[in-house]
Image (cartoon, rainbow, N blue to C red):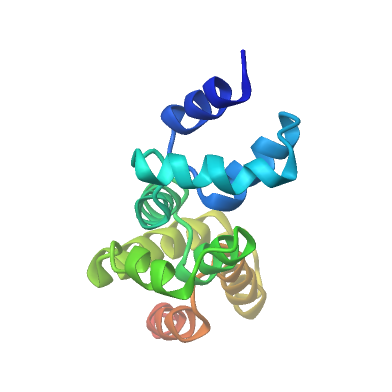
Amino acid sequence: MDVREAIYHYCNYQERCHSQVRDKLFSLGCPYKDVDGYIAELIEKDLLNEQRFTCSFVRTRFGQKHWGRKKIVFQLKQLNISDYCIRKGLAEIDDEEYLRTAAKLMEKKWNELRTEKHVYKRKQKVFQYLHQKGFETDVITEMLKEIMTGY
């Protein structure tokens, strides 16, 4: 299989960003001088679209993995996605759904930790869990206040 066939197959399989395609081309042994030509060709044929990739990435990471905005943004920046594309991608997340997801994750984790005797340790563990998932500190703090009113 030649480089063109391989990279077309790679981009047809799922959405990719420019940095992933660039890395794949290098791993296929493509000469450095030809890489930009292949990327331009893929863009022309609409097999490579960074905005479409970003929107897809955001939808799957939030919808399936329940990642928060901070973690999604961090991962997209690791892939050298532009701020414009990141803003467009984050617009895919409905604010109400975002808060519902955070609340659901918080409630689930809170209930998992019901054997924890110290409420403040329990609160800290829930905070860490949601923070690790990429939810914003102010969102977590506000939700924890609501939970703590019952204690």
